[in-house]
Length: 542
Image 1 (cartoon, rainbow, N blue to C red):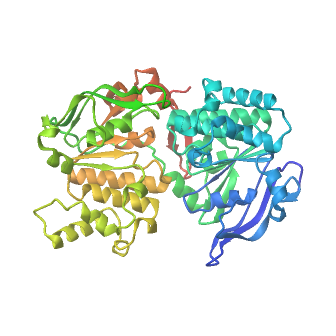
Image 2 (cartoon, rainbow, N blue to C red):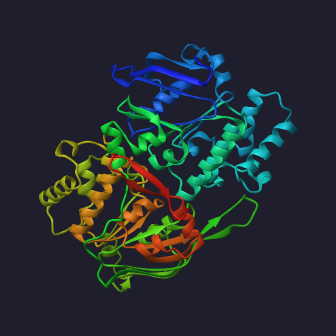
Image 3 (cartoon, rainbow, N blue to C red):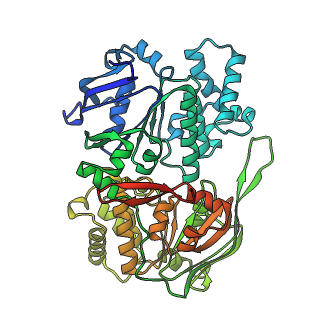
């Protein structure tokens, strides 16, 4: 092993123990000290399994079929448990995709941060606390003393990811493995967390192995990348070369699936308003402890928006801005404290059943919103229960037709949600929402958790369905690249208020509010070249 390689993976192969199926096939790569190396690919490409093998954290069903993982001259795959415990955390740190599943909900933040220092260092209690407070300040946690006594659920997603990063960097590892560290975060927080990660690792000389399906983010921060497809490494090289001149068809496919130019919508909304929100306010009761009085937090403050027939209104803003609360309140899933919601000029409460039948919702995570005990066909057919004009045979026929329309083949109609891919589950969720032919649809982050190619397919499907049926839509998203493709009008929210709204082109080309400019500056502008590659620029930057 040469001195300029911190870790060297050679011909790594992994298989499923029960079936013998290969899930990672002879993958090789290396990472140099201080380098940021990226591994990209769709779900199921094997990128996470390949990197988990580095610290021997593979699921029980997965076994090593061959190859080596050499870290500082030692093969990790031959290490015993004691050596692995010394390696994990102290030498190689891991930041997982969802910090809520990797942070212990029953332990305070202070105890969790101190745990690694107790195991891997001989620092005194005072020295441990000093280092923890310093690190929390470096990662941008406000009121660090109180943060030590708080629990993970008391922080936002972005703050939890900062805490997770702090816990890893406290031990100053030589290698940081970051597995989809920003997937669930909005653009501004994503950029802040990644910038923080880069700053911390450069200050400590830490190398980073970044796993993601977010190509623009990988392009911005990595030196070299490896592209994986179905367990095989199909292309590797410098980030700049692969983006500008990809050689493998799969890499070209990934890059071509990115949103490039603004779509000119061939059909426009009418002048007639279908949903009106007037001075809407929502409050939540909060209680900090059993001995303190209940307090109320205002999540929405005097919101007023109109949505016209056939119009797609995008609701954007950072995490905690209130956009999901607004969508759920309009859908009737959250009670308002003040204000009114009108449907076709009348209070929605005047005919609540008709409103709910004409107002359908597509949730961010279809796996949690689809009943796991029902088949695909039954899930869609259930939405027609209150359709008196259709008999049982007609309901089944329409459900089958709608599933076919969203791209679910007949062979899948008897499957359960866990037997479908993420993209297929989202198609079923969309089919369930449109099978009644509703007049108004609320789509809450419908593509945020999907791979870039599946995301492009779902957005194309959404546009075709909206064009065919002409439903109005409130499209909630933190991904402004997606919003640019689907929206007629954009409403920007911050801290429970609407701070700016206008047609899509005006908001994207001439934003007035500093916060809107901050949101836009966090996403790239992509330009295709004649080599099948892309060039990345960043909005509002010289």
